[in-house]
Image: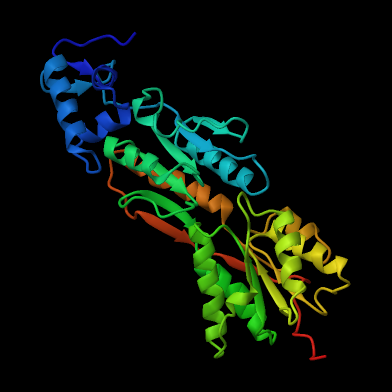
Length: 346
C-alpha cells in the first residue's frame, strides 16, 4: 500500500478518488492541455480534499509514473502487425516502460477502448488500426486519457496523436512507375470504401495518370468486400477486371496479399505476368518477395510507425506538449519482377 505523507496525497490517491488515470492526474498537475475542464475540476477538488495543495509520490521524491502502456492490436500478429508490435515493445523498453499487450481477433472485447479512462493500472495506450467506432476515441479525448493511434482506418478526432504511412504518396509512386512503363489503362483493387487509405491511394493513382494527361477510369476499380483485404479479394476482384472486354494492362492492389490473389487470377486465365499484365502491391511483407514472380510493391515503414507512435506518446506522458499531432512517414517503391512495359496492342 502507498504510504501517505502528512499534508500530501499520492498521485494514486487522487486517481482513485476521481476515477481517472494516473497519467491524467499528471497532466492536470503539470497544467498541460488536452484535459476536459470537468476532469480538471474533479482532479483539483480531489487534491484539495485529500492533501492540501500538493501531490507527491509515495516516497516523497519526484513523482514518476511507471505503469505499463496498454497496446491494443485486435488482429493476428502476422507479418504486417508483428513488426509494428515488436518495435513498440522495443521502444517502450528503451523508455523504461513495460507493454501490456491485448492482441488477437478471437472474441474481441468491443468495450476495451471505451473503458480505458477508468483503468488505473496503465499509463496510456497505443491503438493499432482500431476498428472501434470513432465515438470511442472521443470518449478517450474527453477524459484526457493519453493515447496514440497507429495507422488509423478513419479520420481521428481533432487533437488526437496519430502516425501512419504516406498512403497518397506511396500509391502515386507505384502508379508513376507503371505510367513510366507505358501503362495508361490501370486497374485498381482497393480496400473498403470507408478506409482513409482507400481514398488516399485512389487519389495517388489518379494523380500519377494526370501527370501524363490521362484520366483514371472508375470502371477499372473494384473494392474489397467486408473484412480485411486478402488473397481471396485479389482472386475475385482481379478476376472481374481481367474478364472485362477491354481489361487493364496493369493492376494496382491495396496490399501484397491482394496482389498475390491477382497473380493467381491471372495464372488461371493464362495471362502472363509481367508480359501481359503488370501487378503492384503495398506493404512489402514477406509474401511479396516469396511470390512468383516477386511483386513490385510499396514498402510501408511498419517498424518506424511503431517507434514513432511510442515516441509521441512518451512525450505526452512525460508532461510535454506534442510536437505534431498527425505524422505521415515516407514510403518506398520496391521494384521487382511483377511489372514490365505495357504489352503491344493485339
